[in-house]
Image (cartoon, rainbow, N blue to C red; front, top):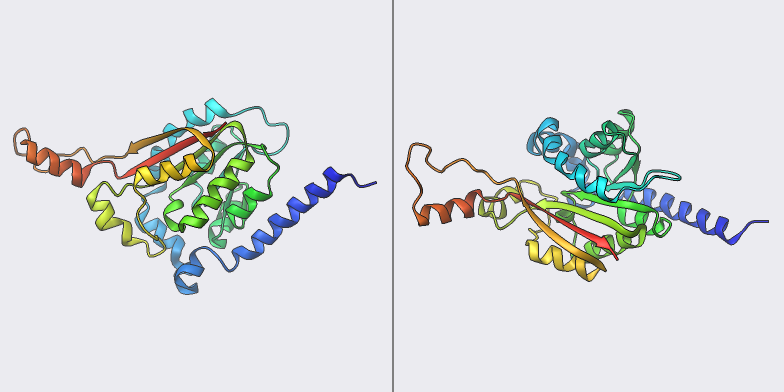
Length: 257
């Protein structure tokens, strides 16, 4: 006889399959049309940075994973939403950490599977909502949230909160608009970006979704001097340097209570 648990598990599987079908009409293509969706992987290669550069920026997060990861009884306990070129998944695999990625762009999902990674094509919010409650240790999303409207952003955070176990971690990284070069120019290189997210707003939305101990980490400043041949900067020059060359990204981490 089929148990209620079996039926609930099958329902989650069907919901995840529906999310995958919806992804055919979502993500990059829905924002810009099929022509840009077809070249988005090449666009990321041009402007995201080399895989080696991205991997070097991601490596410090391994400590955060180690602090929350528990022995997996079944299936991976880490989910990367919007996994893109899968640098994070590759790094985790190389460190012996089982992880799954999901991306709404079919080219990214296919490339990840071709590389031997656990990647599914689908909608990350629906996929998380269909997970068994408390089944994940960490949900990550690198340079994804700036592509989402506020309602979808809150839905993502709420779905991640559902899927994470108590003490599990939500890890986000996004461009930092307090760096004026990023906020006024470089952010808009990607036409699928919606609007810059000030760190305080992102942290508030994460906290409002039920996460505790929310932390904001400024990341990746350009420490080179404005004029390498000049002497020590004046106070005004230092202020300008911070505004133009301060942290280009930031991370937000929150934990399920």
